[in-house]
Image (cartoon, rainbow, N blue to C red; front, side):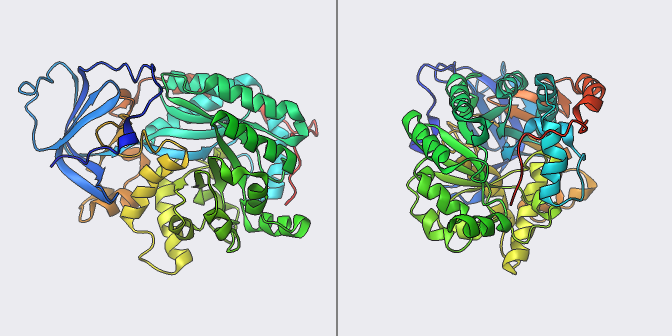
Length: 473
């Protein structure tokens, strides 16, 4: 069996980029795996005993059946014998704040107002660039080990995060966050970052404009951001309708939901990534249906459960509008981990509970959200998200030999509900191996942890009484 042909736009990369000048010789050959593929209707399927050939950072071919590497001229390529493993598209963490791993576990069992105002925003006022760098390094290591090959980040000191991302080998969409309290300078810094870093790291880094949220960025700044996004062809990544309380407060104060605020500002006519959206209500659906931009939503269900929010992202309603819902973790300060594997399982379970229907979300639908829909949500659906000729070679190999994954009666269900992030053996981005047999090849975790712990007392000191912002529902 041969994998489906790519769509016409699946091979696009910036003209003249290193990817566009890729050599023809095979770089990497993976043999003996079971490959997760999408058919022409985007249904999930599996190719047994597959051989995946990578050239110039792209998937060249996927074929079923044993391969004679000498016969097909691939003997000189790097070879991975993946017998007993599943090859999947790398997972995408559609919304996170990588430096916030430094705050993992710092503010537990609290409502979101106290979490922000008493802990997170006072501590973030202490952040130095070195703290950001160490947090980003640890986060990238955690994601590589968990099978994440791409992430969307929205934070501060993003020049530092971009440098760490490039060094780690991961793919990312990055945005410099801003508040209206920073004045026009905050918005200008966000644009400057986006233009300077767009398509850097051999095309692995794309960028976005990153207004924080409608409750911290005023209507004028949101409208100005929409204009800049259209002018420069940039994605906009922001928090909106995070929970139902925010939607209720917006209606009480402004007579509009957060989604209606975005529409009035023109942001629904741009490429837009909305983080969370658990506060999206029925009246928002026709507003979203009229959007002329490419809108995606990132869902991070573990955090919603921790904050005891009464609703979750309305996955089915958004899918029916053609809006991709990608999987996310948010920052580790609220989620405690950057485990997208867990987000996949929780998304499926939360939707079954919310819909009161065990048929929603199926395992195959959850895998679709974790792969192709997540890629589309971050604006990379033409490059990643599926294993197919022409796509970037972002691949993870998953070992299902453990007792917790055996026997395998339904491979999709095993991947979603039995497998864990620790079952990822190998992580590959653009054909480069970042982790092989659980060994990280691009980052030194012990050194990061030692220095991070040395800096921790100064970072978490809240005696100064400062906050970077005030959270009001």
